[in-house]
Length: 246
Image (cartoon, rainbow, N blue to C red):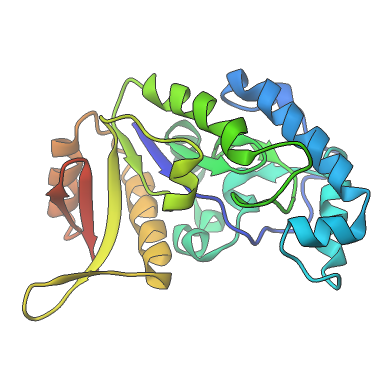
């Protein structure tokens, strides 16, 4: 079972003292060539403050974000689940995970990074600034990641629940056997409406519930039964789509 998450723009500062990025230690070692290319292009970009601000969609006063990229291969690292700090990760609340829950997340939670491709929740990564639509010199994010990530996901043997945004899904399309989790609200008339900002928090809370349960689901029927038993409204919506009703 894999719970596939997007990254976040915001990231925690700092890291474990005395550590630095080690590409060989990351999960999905098949992506090492693409990770190396992305890091190389990011280093080239980081030499120019103005070009970095433009390519990353930053104001020139966001120098700290650019400095992160300049030090990306030498700065200290944190587990990916602790590095990302956006709304989804606030819902997941990695800081309060038990050791057992962290081990479970390391095996089953995968985060789709624009810089590193797929990483496990426990992979140690530095702080950086790069998005799905960032422009790296001589490198297309779509061309870099789409085929290798799609290939990896297609080879996943178990259940894949895709909680990524559409933008990240385009950087690595899931296989037909994956299930996309769509967060919706339901009105009094029964009509369902997609949520925007709150969908991230709902996804984080859902993933946290799965992690805390420690249960591995091999089929979509299994995860639906589990959710129903816990009062979580996860329901079929259409081919390959589940509605998480909040």
